[in-house]
Image 1 (cartoon, rainbow, N blue to C red):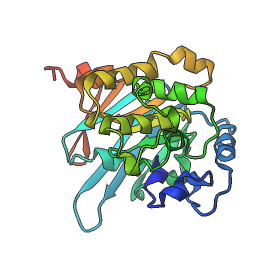
Image 2 (image 1 turned 90 degrees about the horizontal axis):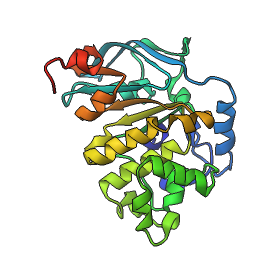
Image 3 (image 1 turned 120 degrees about the vertical axis):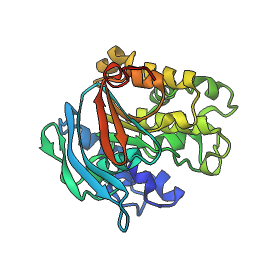
Image 4 (image 1 turned 45 degrees about the vertical axis):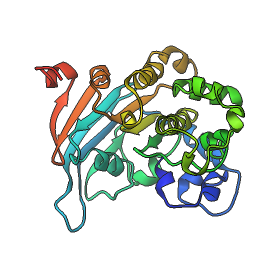
Length: 280
């Protein structure tokens, strides 16, 4: 999630305070209230449009230029391209982790004035390439102060394809993961971070390259569990929409929309068969 990159200490972040409002002082138990208040505003995602987004890193000619696209509720949009093409920069700019230099972002047709404070749970949740875990229990790393029961946590872990890993842990949800998740593998860390997103049931799920530490089979299972179980999720009034960075052919084939980036610009945009006519 975006707020995890603020540089705050583990104690502060795990404390159930105003975690997503950039006010990381104190230990007020109001995080669930904040998330519920946002959810009650009736602004479920129908469409997200970015228009002419531009950001050039100061003192360089590197960044992204004039990026525009639109995603619809319940869809999977995949951003792909070579290393250095601007994929991560685009995600960080959209989420407010970098300042907009030009362009606009529209949520259901309305301008997002402050992306950093807008794209927070339950509207949006983010897992970067290297997620941050803390030297606390698995439960605490997933909840970060949110009030959810074991059934909700188990559902999130199942979506993250972590149920078999949990069985091998003697202390189950009370297992200490160690500093920065040192007791877990890279793939386990990414899936715990994914479960942290799922338990919040955000409107928009943003992943930056889950495939960096997951094998193909596990990653495909994760995407299947997000979208194949849509009927049950709709009964819970949750229709996840995904914006992800990936280079995996199987994920690209599943995508409703692919955005191919090159040198900070959109090189191609469309469905798999339209873009990769000669195969991948």
